[in-house]
Length: 107
Image 1 (cartoon, rainbow, N blue to C red):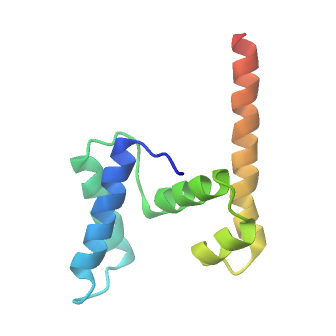
Image 2: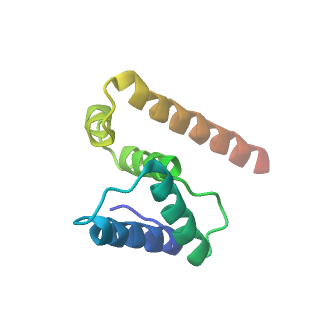
């Protein structure tokens, strides 16, 4: 089971609604997607910067942390090379180590 906070769930729901809204009419441009995600983040009160890349990274993070294979994540993200996807895994492993070190220092 994947746990996400309320703001993230609202954002994901609104992005899904936008996808359906624009589906039969026209394809959103890269800038259009950025603008819509920014407006949704603002309306939901998210303080952190949100972008399409942040959403992809969050998706990869949640999927990896819940046990998905790198090859499956590679396919879902549309990476042509597993090396690109492995960058996410390396970043996540590095962040975990930083959190562990921080917790040890607090003890």
